[in-house]
Amino acid sequence: MSDSIRISVQDGTCEIRLDRAPVHNAFDDRLISELTTALDAAAADDAIRAVVLTGDGSTFSAGADLNWMRAMASASEAENREDSLRLARLMHTLNFLPKPTLARVNGSAYGGGVGLIACCDIAIGVEGAKFSLSEAKLGLVPAVISPYVVAAIGVRQARRLFVSAEIFDADEALRIGLLHQRVAAGELDAAVDRSLHFLRKCGPLAQAEAKQLALRMAGMAPDRAEAVDAENAALIARLRVSAEGQEGLGAFLDKRAPRWAAER
Image 1 (tube, rainbow, N blue to C red):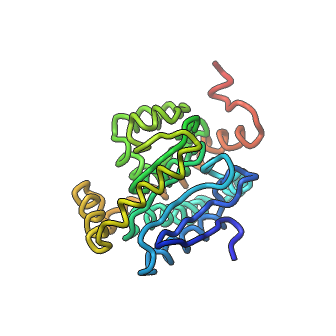
Image 2: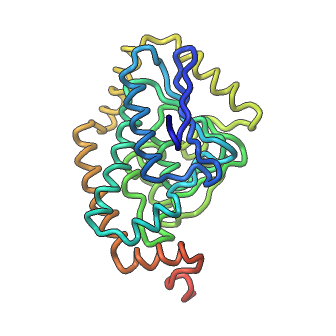
C-alpha cells in the first residue's frame, strides 16, 4: 500500500499516479521514496512495456511540499545534501528507465514537477496548464533537475527560465520542447492512448537500446549523471543553508516578500 501514489497496470502499461491532490501532488520524502520504488519495480517487470506518470486532481505536481521545505530549511547542510541525493536518484531512475515513459500532464507543474516531465520520453499536456522553474525566487536554483530540463528545452531557454523563474503556459511549454503535444483536457486520454498504441508496436529490447542510444549521443551516460547528481546535490544543500537561501525559504514559508524583492 502507498500513501502518496497509486499504481495500476493494464495491457502492459503501468500508470503511476501522484496521489496527493489536497496539496497539489507536492513532493515530500515519502512521495520521492515511493515513486522511486515503483519505478524500480516497473523496470524489473518484463510484463510492463511502458510507464505513464500523471497526477491526481487538477495539478500534475506543485513541486516541493511546504512541510518538507520547512524541515529542510532548518536542517544541516549534510542533511540537505542527503535529501537532495534522494530526489536526484528519483530523477535519475526515471530518466534512465529501460522502458518508454510518458508524462500525462493533467495540469500545472512547478519545480520538481517540471523535472519529472523533462525526464520522460514523451510528454503530453493539457491546455491551461502553467509551468515554472521557480527556485530563484527562493534564493535557490533548480540544481537536481537541471540536467534533464536543459536536455529537454536547451541551454538558451533554460538560462532564461532559471534566472527569471517566470510562469509560462502550455503553448510556451510546447514551443520550447518541454511538452511534445498540447491538447484540450477532454482529449488527454485519447492522445495518451494514441502514443501507447505506437509504443506497443515496437520491440522492447530495441526500445531500451534506442532510448539509451539517444541519451548517450546527447552525452547523458548513467555513470556521468551520477557524478553530476552528487555535484548538484552539494550545490543545492549549500544554497539552502546560505543567508540568501534561508531568507528566501523563510519569506516563502511566512508568506512575505524576501528582502531583495521588498526593496524594489
